[in-house]
Length: 331
Ligand code: GLN
Image (cartoon, rainbow, N blue to C red; front, side, top):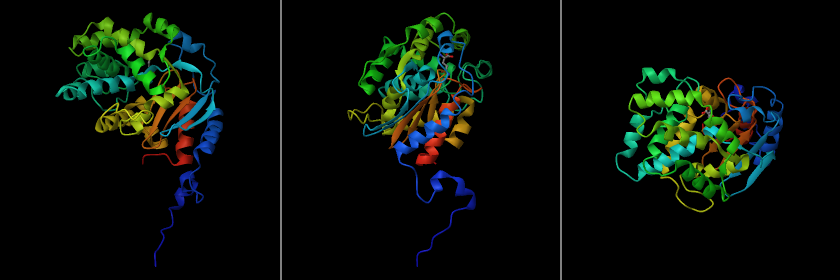
């Protein structure tokens, strides 16, 4: 006689232990959006980039984009905003594409930028001095500046190359938010402190201003939540864009990008995200968070007010609710 093992009583509150099973995506998205909206006034909109401070904090979007192209949508899904640090995922993708083309290049890349969580804010300077100008990972500002330096060797214009890749993945033209670009070009004091320090340690090899231009341009790329959920589906599909069948990245490299997103993509809150969402995530300071559910879908949640770590409060709640209710966690 087959036997069944009753679940632990402590699991009884978990939606994925509901005997009726996980929710279907349409209901999951609607319910997660409703729960998250209740928190849309918690947190604080980033104001160190002036145009971000003018955004209506009650804007909210939640998109689940399945590999077969089916989309589940709630809220302001077509409103565009600057992708900010989500661009760091694409800088890593382009750097790994370039590394894949030349032997030994990937090893060199990982000598110049680590793959450990930093435990510090995304724009912190303190570790760099102690760690000889080698950033902890590519998902923080210092790490992305190193990637931008790496990309200036094989590419004439890394920002244009990023927009070209994103346009292909979205099937729509992707460009820059000129107001954000100008605002960050005239400020970016933190990044203007990080870059020369790394150059002094020999870890930036191109002109520091050219590296900063690439970094700032990538942060100003403008996309909607719908586009942000659509573009990285290749990372949830073994490196192959499910719309076109084109291989964007070798499967082991796509896994590495996802691993770095899980451990480092939400900065000092990556542990909390692994615990409460259970998906590789990347956040941006304009309030978006993109999450990969391997072999299934990509989610983008957007709400401008941020917590102290620089991650959107309501977007994190939306991802937690959706992952729990629909059983998406990778664990
Ligand atoms: N452009 C922002 C900066 O350099 C990006 C930071 C972020 O999105 N976390 O500070």
